[in-house]
Length: 160
Image (cartoon, rainbow, N blue to C red; front, top):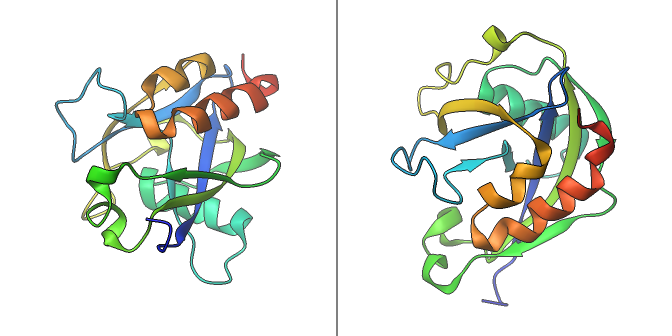
């Protein structure tokens, strides 16, 4: 596993005016309503040499159909996670050991109707909702739980 690199990635903690955070249900796990990992924050890979601040807005547009947001905070440094052994060689195209992520807090400037999961011909998500920031760690799959815990702590000042 240590021979494989980390995939460069950005993630978005998108806050609505009430201080709630957008989570979306993975389309490949439609029956995982209450299972950890079934709901997650928008995130995605970075292009080579891409500025993370540009990448996070691009990923929002690709994954939830809108980039009507402004960056209001940034996690200091990068966070990493390793895939569990049973996902190595399968997840992330089999080319990565996990992800190295730059996370941002963003304020949503649009309306709920601007969130359009149906714009991508192969959507990553099939449902979305607003949740309390403190709920994030419980929603995360085990190998991402530490990251969601760190994000909930770091971005608490932006919540309700």
